[in-house]
Image (cartoon, rainbow, N blue to C red; front, side, top):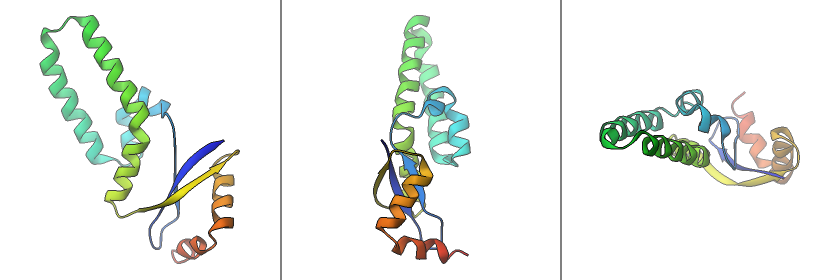
Length: 126
């Protein structure tokens, strides 16, 4: 069963953010941040990478590689939390959690069945 957090903003489509590890953010963090319009997170990631690169020059290459892998692993585990944080900064409100066995469409169907008032939020956009 997959779990999503539900984010709403007046006049906008409902956004579901999936829980769990983000493999694409682990493999391609800067591209993942760009695709999800997470500009501040991208800037912080690049700045921290530059600081780490400057500070790690005296370390052996194996230690640098291990530390870089650990950072990428943390990015993969926390990427979706950072997306939720970005949405909150932009005025989106998290209103709950929805779980479904299928994909995002089934999760939206379960959400709207339980909260039909949210359909009015999306309809206001049209």
